[in-house]
Length: 150
Image: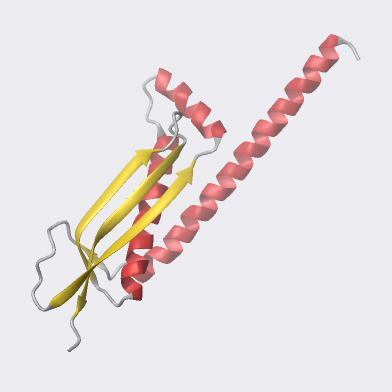
């Protein structure tokens, strides 16, 4: 095998690995978005309020939802190319959307388990947890209100 054949082989293997990574990344992202869409309607009745909890006659309990979501490296490379031309960074937008939705759902699921129908003082924070920005953590928290049972 000469050097041209070796180079061609390495190029084919690299492109094959990129294609596999891209395919599985898209499959996993689509699967996660479908799972979110399936879970969200069940918790739509839980109302979120940004105002502080001050409802008389009710008990408040802190509820927290946290999610760490990672993006595949193919999409990250695409994002960096798009940024050179000032284009919208849709791969980052998708990453942030999935993290926010997952964190909010986990918080609402915790509130639903305790029989709550409202969350006051709702806050949502998102932060990058690596230098590339390919992994983010979203934290949703608030005070779940459960009517007092006396």
